[in-house]
Length: 136
Image (tube, rainbow, N blue to C red):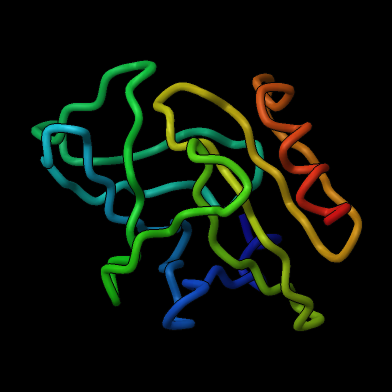
């Protein structure tokens, strides 16, 4: 989709670009320490992912996500099950994108200032934590 090409996704730590062509590329590591690259759709609410078939992921299992450039853990302060990256739109506005670390759990939050947009049918799992972090 050409509509998403203007948005960039960056690492909150090193500010490197995480999106290439039609994908956001992150390193994922499971609890056994196996890691692999996962390609996400830049379309928020689209949970289609691509990965090497030898990197096995199980529904309900938690992964840590890392920046493939600086290897920094992409952890959100809000909740231990959420990771975060930064999205910059064509107006150069920065948004925090929070998403679930749990395979098959569809919760994504797009946050700028006081406003939160919510995607995914499991979003109620964390919405209270996300809202709380705003009122601090």
